[in-house]
Image (cartoon, rainbow, N blue to C red):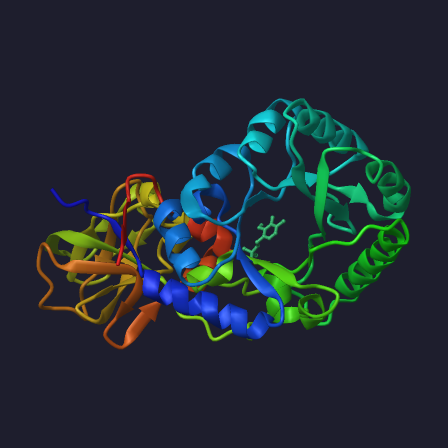
Length: 369
Ligand SMILES: Cc1ncc(COP(=O)(O)O)c(C=O)c1O
């Protein structure tokens, strides 16, 4: 039995997007960020496709995600924090780990020494994200201690931007200055780093300074899926990777004066042919699409009427008179001349593309093509 709501993930478009990001980010290498199960899309096939496309390493957020990717044949790296009781297992599996404080460096050092190993680490600097890492103005002092610790293969230094979607952001430039000051202090201590990285998708598109010397690596998530943060501009020629479809389950004509859905937020003003579509907010459709969004049926736009329910929504079939039960309904993606993009939903909901992609429901069948 086929699932009603299906998310098709086009892996060859994903690989094309990866290469497009590489072209723009050059001379930096591009590390895909596949945390949270590749933003909820299904990490295994996406990771394999990206490694096949040339990705030399993969980043995730936490240990369970790292364990799922150990068979890829490329280094797997945790970006955020690491808890003391997670360290031994991650070191045993050669996962690249973040140092976010002197304390975490000491714990990693001890855990590595206990295994007679070197833990490969990247030092995370908080240059203005306010989330995690060595505070940039305390970093030189911290590095003096960290550099003395045994069992650490210090491979990278990195930071993260909160405002990189703002083209020419003065704050982002200030973060880069802070980073370079800490880098100079580290170099004065004799440290040299194989990888220096700061840019995410927003910065690759809006802060080219983060894709050039001294940086040699960028971390890219959302752009790989053909989506982007509409708060900023896009300089990479990306193609949408996702197509979300379902089926039409009922077609009927409602008389004038018929209210539709919870809350009766829509009422027909004339006899109207409508369709019931098998998808709702449990599948990830933003409630904000109620009375505002549309779907595509037979290459034609069909406006959503009334409030979206958990499993169903109602559309007007006024412009699709030949629609019948069982027809494919495109929720996201292209049908004929029309296309509905992740950003369109994000705009209507007043959110960003990450929220839309990560909210696609667990009962939606993900298929790679
Ligand atoms: C530290 C870090 N780097 C890079 C990324 C990738 O971001 P994006 O999906 O915007 O490319 C993230 C994701 O939030 C992140 O937390």
